[in-house]
Length: 154
Image 1 (cartoon, rainbow, N blue to C red):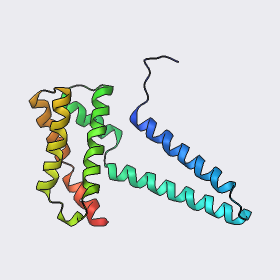
Image 2: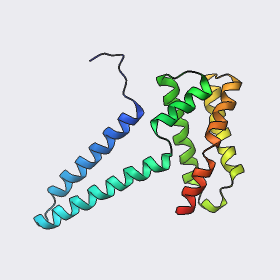
Image 3: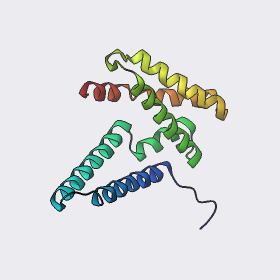
């Protein structure tokens, strides 16, 4: 295999999800239960895993094309490093939101502060130009209405 080939974050996540599903199914199959119970448990686990994957994709809120568009709009170019950084920042933003105990207390201003802090942290590490950082923050901040809608559904 070519040493320059690197796994994409999405491919890695998909691989981990598949491995978890296989592990769960094998564990259930070797558990001392009746065949009918085991099949039902496998079906329930598969449905649960499928729902979690859909929830994650929905919570992530961006499909690959939108991500590429936002990276291009912010940086004027697309490469694997920028896409990886974008996904990492998006994940950090979601993790910060998930850490908030009272989701009703998440205001647009608090969301913008989370975005600003995370993007500026990455910008310092990566030494990105200020104009590109500002465009990136604006792109993430556009997600507020989507985030607010998802939080109201919980």
